[in-house]
Length: 98
Image (cartoon, rainbow, N blue to C red; front, top):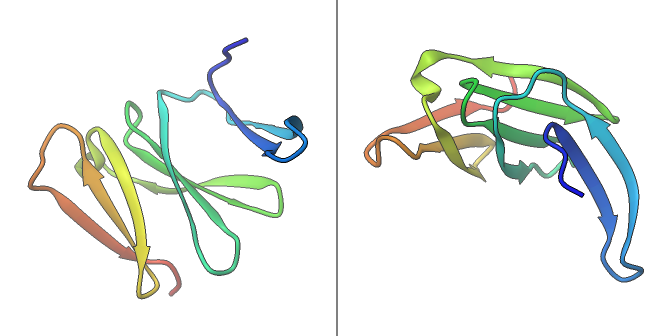
């Protein structure tokens, strides 16, 4: 069953769903990156947003038109690096703290 707008936590060894978190009004949830503190970042390629999930709660961490078709997420040196599906040359970086 396919449902848009959920982050699903799965126990791979047991092959069972552990939990699901509903993201309200998603466009197209796409890539995920997890920082060293276990905080989760999810790109929304259609809505030009990056969500952050901490302690099973989410917030809009970044909402900017520069995130057009945000797709690839990568964390390095305490920065989230965001690639764009629509513009292969676009690289956007933002510090995770501060």
